[in-house]
Structures are given as structure tokens and as C-alpha cells.
Length: 391
Length: 135
Image (tube, rainbow over all chains, first blue to last red; front, top):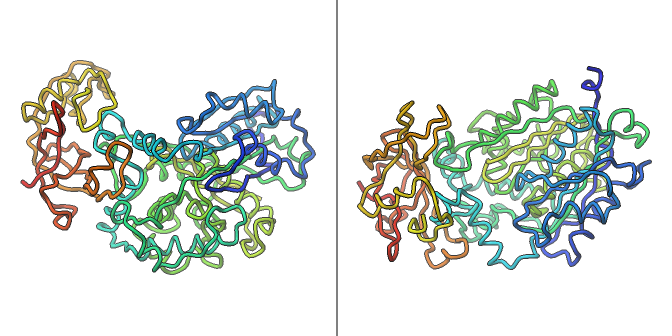
């Protein structure tokens, strides 16, 4: 069918500043991201044919927020709905939007992700986080994400000899780039020493191995090829999307040294895009914890399993290295507004491929980047989306 | 299921007898009567063959530590327990368990690969769980 051969482009990307406490309502937060995404486009809100709102609703005071957000952005009466895969929500939203446009059902779809983590007291947030595992078989033991990722870190160190210094170097790298990103929550460079000296949260992970909750919103606007060329001169094409899941119950996992859902998602995304790991020029990976970035290198095929620690130690994931990763500071620097994170990753890659990453900071452009990748994980390797984009 | 663990978040389940067995000192798995698949945590429905016919099977308790962490930070309701060790262990029957490590074992002694024993434990007034102890 002709319709199934349609190419789909990202025409607009935007995000609010990510902060510990934004001081505005969720509708206003989303508007900031939407406004930036619409900047310079030949497109009015009324021409957006559907909106997909992405959030982890247990953190929202507003019940069914998609209706409210669509209203405030002027997107009614077109269809709107919420998608949720926790921390991977907004790349799931991008995947669904891609599917709708590629199928020919819609020409232009907006994906709006947000989270206002400061709406909850920290006790309320901790209570919800305690229910992030299997509530029947895991939560009764007192489990939170740092502890779950820490068990992966321990297994990775045991099997491959990965060191706490190598993990700390991930934070050092990301903080260096985060310092240049005006929309990042944490803008102070952090040394390996600082990470190693920070207090233990769940051994072997320390405070600075962990990202922090944040308030923020992101927006990605997708369009069919025909419409995209009228909307913008700089479309960035969605070349591949892979999406996968793993068991929620940790005891039912097959591996503790890598995220199998990320391996699955990456394989499908590479196959669809017709590229290999060596063809990727710049990547945004889900560094909710330093160990998560090291496993991402391996699960995405940037290096062999077990060589992630070496890859960061050799500086290969810095700008100028073999594969620059998280050159906007990553979740570790930007902070992690759950539903907004994936859209922020897409924004960075789109800027990199358009060659206008100078809009974030002139020193953050990876020169000549033509193919970029986003790896966004929900929960502790529960959901994964891998997206590949082309200039 | 209210009697399972320090704080239970699940009221009812087809496998609620699991807690009754814990109170008797037994850690049980379920086995599908139709296809023979063994499940831990126990389940009442088999995704392999879709059967709902199960039998309870005791686990020997012999297991090996796969990985662990010492949590210094806990969700609401567990703050008083920190620090505590959480772990995944693999049982000789092939199933894996996620649980806590008994506080009778010093954190420094824990090493992935070491032999452990899975045991039922009383964790409060009429509250039962399981944990890893020394073999």
C-alpha cells in the first residue's frame, strides 16, 4: 500500500527548563514546551490533528490530564489521549504518533510529555516509588529503583569487573555537558572524586550515581512527508523505532548484567532503519543511574557486553570520541521529569541532526551528525524504546 | 494476602495459601498440573498452557546469591528498617527469588555466587515473609 510507504518526520521539538520546582501549573509547563516546538514552523495549533499526552499519572494531581493539556494548548476538538510507560512514556507517545502518521490516519500529531514531581511531598513521592515494583511480591520487602539498579550494578561489576570509578566517570562526563545546557537542573561540573565521596544510597550506587526527580515538559511534533516539507525546511526523519518490555518481577528476569528489553528494542530499531551501531553519530541514552548508561552502551551495541566500563574510561562517549552520548547532560544533569524525559532526549537528537545544537550551547554540537539514536527506558528495564533519526 | 510481608499492598489472591504455608515455616512454589511448569513467586494461572490447575510444591531452600544491594534509603513505611540487604537468589529448582537477606548476616560477608538458604520468617504480629539465611 502506498500509505505504508509514507515517511514521517519530526518537524518541531521543545522543552521547558527542567527544575526541582517550576513554580507554574502543569498546563503552563506544557505550554512552554509546546511553544518552543512550534517556533518557526508554518503550522497553527488548529492544524494539529491529534495530541498524545505522556505522564506517569500516579504523580499527577489532575485526573486524566490529556483533556486539560489539549484544551490549554488549543488542540481541542481533535482527539487526545494519555500514554504511559513510566519513564519511557514520551517515546512511547512518539512511537504511537509515528504509527498514526505512517498509517495515513493523521498528517500532524503532537506528543506532549510532562511531570511535576514537586506537586507531591517527598513522603508521598516515596510511597509511590515503593509501589514501582511488583506490589504483591516485591514492594512488601521495601524496594525502590536505586536498589533495583544497584543489583544490576553489583552483578555487572561481579561479571565484568566494572568499577565504581568507571560508573563515576559517566556522571563526570554528563555533568560537564549539563553545565552547558541552560535547561538542565544541575549545572555544576562534578568530578569522579565527588561521586565516589557522595553518600551511599543503595550499594554500590551513591547519591551522585543517581538522577533526581524534576519538574518539566517536552514536546515533539510529527508530520507526514508531504506536510513536513511545507511546515519546515529542516525535517528530521524517523528511521527506526523498536519497543519492548521485560517482566516487572525481578525474580523472573533472565539477566542482571543488561536490560534485555533494550537489546530487543535496539535490534528492531536498527533493522527498521537499516543501520548498525557503528553508523550512529550521536546518542541520548537513559542514564537514570550511571550503571544504566554503561549497560546502554552494551545493549545498544556501541561496545561488546562487559566493555561499557572501558568505553567510558577511554573517553569514547565524549564529544570527539567514537560515539558521543548524552551531550546535553543526560538525566543525571537535566533531572528526570518522568513523562517529559523521552521527549527531551528526542529534542536533543533533532537539534544535533539539524546542526542547530548551538541553540542549546555552541560547544555541544557533534559535527556532521547525520544519524542519531534515542534510548529511553521505563522502570528498571521494564519498558524500552529505541528511536533512530536521520537528517 | 494482608499477612504477607512487612507492609502488604495486595488484599486478595488465588495463591493466598502461600502465607498460611509461611506461617508453618514452609516456602512453597506452584506447579502447573497440566504442563509441569514451576512458578515462584507462585501463580494460579499458567501462561504456557493457560491451565488453572495447580499444586503446591515445597522449595528445598538451597539457593545461590545472584546479586544484592544494601539499601540505605527506603520507601515510606520502611524508613526504620535501613540499612537492609535486598537480593536475588537462584534456587536449585531453577526458579529465582527476590527477597531480603537476614540481618543475622553481616553485609561484608555477602558475595554473589555464595550459597544461601531460603527460609520462612515471622516479621510482625501475624505477619509472615521469607528471607535468605546462612545454609
